[in-house]
Length: 461
Image (cartoon, rainbow, N blue to C red; front, side, top):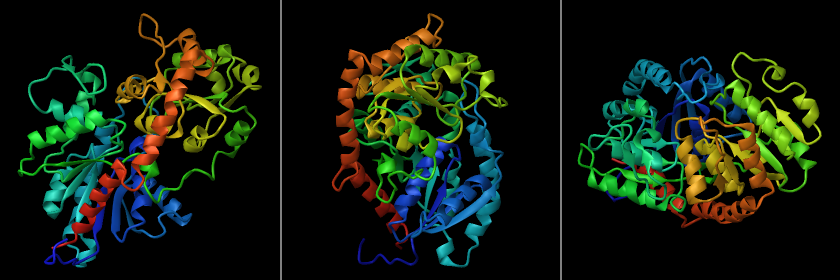
């Protein structure tokens, strides 16, 4: 900060998140982190998400943060309704509704008489491309949050240059070649706009995706913004390890399944979960159930029933719960995933490979059997299989389906086979790298410092 710079108000960060769970979790991590700094934060979201944050604050979270929650729209439980298998979550509707609602709220920001009520910097989700106009109207810098791995912004940036078709091949450093359509779903590209962004924030760390991070920065250098400036690329993840975050934020929940895990042998249990958004076809659920029964491995299954289904008996094999109760536990409600993955009884994770689950498995040192559903999940699975080598795929049928035999073979290979021993040996170094990235002088700590400095200096004139 130069001598001529004067802080005329407290730095005021306006946060515009997408409320789907996989995105919103990252913003909760950031709020814990920002509690360490003398900044004001205004977060605009749905009534449900604002209430969720208010409940956390009432329980003692964010106690040192000057946090203002603005309920600007009422979403009908966007994250509560599972989506069809293989389909992209309908963020179109979320962004459209939020954009319309924010236009109504915008005059309050523009006409605020109190200087502290006017934002000095904006952090917006990757799918809120209209935030560019918000930043321009408020005349403040904007950061764009990719709640993903580094390949996601890279694939988006590359696809903005040249004439691509969905079946064209793209090479992402560290991964085998992929088709364009296997990156960020093409249908979602119009939602993204990083032009004139001060920085792109990413929930990953440089040691995990070193070549990809270099490729992103090179692209940004070679393709400046329309204002002539070069956008910073700041991987600050894993955000669950950012200073200020509780080790296990869900520690008040999940006693039943954690008590069950306490009774199991070390590294013996397979944890099975497929996220909060993706819905599996009932046929696939049956195949998973039969594989868990046939492979004779202890398991903890966090099962989300298909929309409209109230009884597990309608989607599970007859008698499944009774036959497996001696070595298996099925939880139908919320589960504290971080605590589960870090429990000593967990020896493997059958996962959809959403990015949060992917990076949480790496941080916990738990090997993964990948069962991707949609979006970025196939690429995340390949990162585990090809880069960190802490995961393995499942053999599918000739028609591309997951079968009980294929799933069971994968489970046995990971939990009791030689392949599993090899994969498990790789997990420790990647867990250590994730922890090291957030320590003083670590790559994510340095990039986080750049990000926080940008926020603090936004109040300087």
